[in-house]
Length: 313
Length: 317
Image (cartoon, rainbow over all chains, first blue to last red; front, top):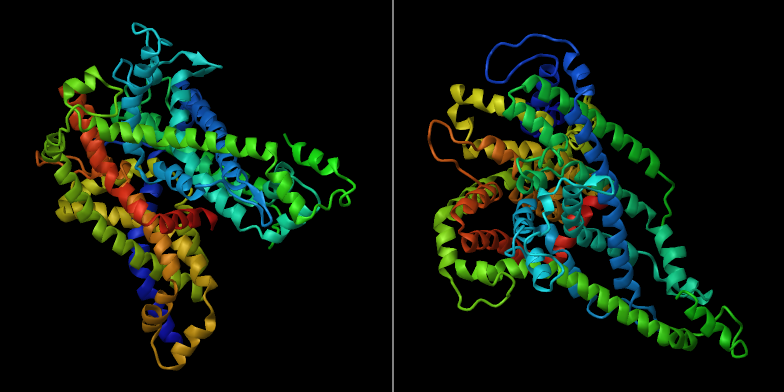
């Protein structure tokens, strides 16, 4: 019997583990190794340089930029997406009429949910290519065209969108325009998530609140929101990962993939730039290792902060 | 606004003790003026956001049916002067046909394999104690936090070196992409199915074993069917995730020795958008984007309940 178990477990695990080791673990391990060399990527010559690459990246202007841009997305993407999603979920679930059974969702809430979820099933690339057309800098673009038509924007001086490195509130404008797309595509998904969590809260908690004379606003802020804390913190962690991975948008939408003038560089684009444009694979790997350490630290911190006793119902 | 229900509760303190409105009172309060304004405001804001989501999508679809000159002349209009279906035919033969074929060819195998290998590994890890169990589990889990860009350079190099030893696993090969997709999807699939198999009751598996079923047979004919809800969720997650994948194919499906690239849909669309810019075939680009997004949207609308719960369950775990 014990023998059978060993054979069974080995049989079930062999193939997945082998694939995973070969295509995921091994490249990661190699990257860590290459990060200690000056390997260019196209030649076979590589010398061990110790931690030189890591010392170098600390004083790299481009990486400092990318780091702050990543931090910008890390703060704004979850913040705006969750705020908007919560607001939409609130309207959807509490905006309806009130009757004997309590406060109801708005009429047509199922339809709204279907529509708001649309961007989630689309590929980030489709979204990026679509928004590239919306953000066009001439009258052919959806936003510029509309604004020029109603006279809010001068046809000779249209909005530059992702080609605009000028700072707005201290952050290059291009990043704000990318943020808008991220929020547009993410809000619906998190609204559905929050909606589902709201509906799983037992009715009698609401009934008790209503009996105590709480209106829909009090009920929402004093009852619903605290009970949603768990879901919101999970959403925050997930959006954090998405914020670190804005590369598809940067890749498709910005000039020279990180431009203009490096105004939209993020970690991923700097890695790509160093590895494939400048041919410095060793250095690119060092940046990637730094990013991985940053990600893991961040995940650990987030898990620590958001851990809290659960309310079971 | 939050005071509205309060004041209406305090207006008639003689009817019932304050703070304990009857059903009828609650009804009256909610359908009062405040309630109605709020209801109207909700509808207004929700409708505005719905338009902000739908309008760009609709605009892309409608622009795909215009002539090129109309795209330039009347970029904003949602109603084409005449329907140019041949935009689709042009985009289809300009590469979308092979993008679709490649994507389907890869996905049929990669999703099936991901599900099979992922649930097998998750099952063995979730229900059997053996030395190294935790180690393997954490190894799979660590893949969730590590960024793909870290592995990009060595993965690229490894696949290129493979070309010499075993060309079928070299760059620009469907099989390579299938195996890479499976390997990269395993982390989340194992993580998700692991927690799912843990929740299944022990007694049924034990009953099957007592009846003489082998471990393997117990898995395939008893446990796997019981895990169907989990399989549907993670299946939807993987189909969408792999359909939308662009980074790995851009890295690995590059032309070798002059043979044409076997591009998948997301990857091809990027190239199409770059090239179309030079050719200024705007309607063709819109048609390409439309063809890339309509199938997923239609599948989503048909299976919306499953897709919504499938994707949100992925986050909830």
